[in-house]
Structures are given as structure tokens and as C-alpha cells.
Length: 213
Image (cartoon, rainbow, N blue to C red):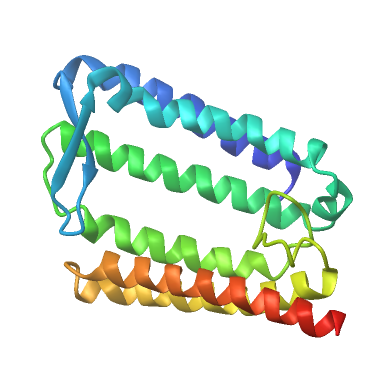
């Protein structure tokens, strides 16, 4: 994905979200649902303004992050080497946030549904593609599996990301399968992510020690 196309997508989504928020603002209740529990039921609320415009503001922030990271990273030449995948990642995050924004607005406009049935498949696809992108990432300070040992060695970084990419793809599949048991789907995803993070942390340390020895 080119830089120009990525810019259009990210900025376009941010502007569109503000426009949609403004259009439906008067139809929303003074307090809007903003958080759902593992059963897909509302368990958190916020004011009308922040419930409507927090996500658009975050999307606009993502637009700024997209430009800043490749310029300020001490290893920015490495980011340039996987810029296509970096572009796709930022665009994918923006699309995912926009999707959650639309679901939230729909709920608060009276279209009640089990949120898990809509979030789990999107999360599954997002996490799976994250796994695909990880294998392309080169050592940098912002994008990827950043432990003290991956940041200290290209070898440890590459090996950890190869394993990490596979694990994230598996987690994506587990998340999609979680649709079959929607009441437990989020637990399956969360525990899988926590387990993988711990494993990759330890794995990178052991690999670094072996390399030094």
C-alpha cells in the first residue's frame, strides 16, 4: 500500500467519523453506552460528547502517529524497509476503530444486539493479519514485539517475530472459533494473548542469552 493511498484512507476515515458523529449527535441520548462485558452486554457509559467523538479524535491522532513514527524512530531506515506493511497496519487499525465506532453508534441509536457476535470476527481477522505483518517487521522502537533483547539483536528480533507471527495467526483463528461460544470467546482471546506475550518475552531472553554464550 502506497503512502499516498494510506494517507487518504486514514484521513478519510477520521473525517468521515466526525461527520457521522455530527449527523447523529442530536439523536443520541445524553449518556451513551461505551463498554460491553464478555457476555456482550453494556457495563459502561460516558457522556454524549465523549461517547460520540472520542473515537474520531483517536482516529485523527492515528493520522498524526502515521507520519511521526517513521521520522522519529532511531531505526527509521528499518521502518522504511517494511513501509508497505507499516502502512497496511495503520490503515487496518483505523478501519477496525471505525468499525467499533459504527457499532457503538448503532447500539446507542436503538439497534440493540449482542456485541460479541460482531466484534469477535473483526478481532479475529485483525489479529490474524497482525501475525502476517509481524514477520516483515524489522528492528525498530515502535512496531513489533519490543523486549530488551529483541531491540538489542537483529537475530533475536527476527526469530522472535517469526514465532510471534505464527502465534498471532493461531490466536486470530482461536478468536474466530470463539464465535461458536460467544460467552467465552473473549476469554479465549485474552488468555491466548497473555500466554503468547509471556512466551515471547521468555523466548527472546533465552535466545539472546544463547546468542551471547
